[in-house]
Each structure stands twice: as structure tokens, then as C-alpha cells.
Image (cartoon, rainbow, N blue to C red):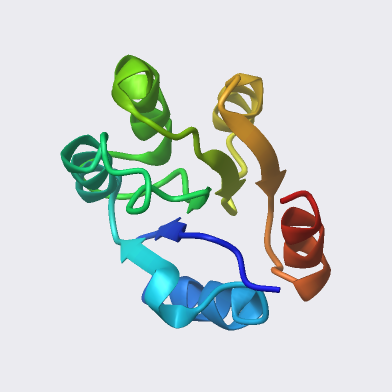
Length: 131
């Protein structure tokens, strides 16, 4: 079963490839959009706020990235939520050990789940079972 659009926001190209391989049973490659920082992802959401087919159903978001980190993107997401025609389920994928970052991410009402590496396929199986 294939699902809708998935957005990967992670500055580590290897992690992006790993995620793409693990979600391949659930998502067509043309339905995966990737960004290496939160700023580019935010701009994409803003530019496509009224285009339901272009907005992601799921976002896998890293915390520590250049230009705009994942926590900053979560705050910006809150700011534009009323403009978006579709809500995105956001899963944090981060190896951060900073307890404050983890607590802030987990406390966001927009975060559906928090995944810490190592990445294993059963994490993604659970994510896509919920769709």
C-alpha cells in the first residue's frame, strides 16, 4: 500500500538515503520530497500552503540542522498552520542527546512521534500502520 507525500528534512545525506530505503514499501519515490534544512522545508510549505496534493502527509524532521533547525521549523509551522490546507504528521528523527531539545520536541502538539537512531524498519512500519 502506497501513501501520500512524505517530506524528509535532514542535513545528513546518508540519513536521507536510509530513510528513503526504509519507507520505499510505503511511498513512491516521486512522492518523497527532501530538504537539508528547515528553512527550505518551511519555504516549501509556505509556497504550497493551498495545494493539498503538494503538502506532505508525513514529515521526518531532524532537530540539528543549519539555517533553521527542526525546533525552529516547528515554531514556524505553528505560525502558518491556519494557512495550510492539510495537516502534516511530524516525526522527529534525531540523535540529539540534549534533554532540553528532546523535551521541547516531544512537547510540541504537532509532533506525532520521536525516533532516535539507530533507524530500524519496524519504526517506519508503525508510522505507516497509523495512516
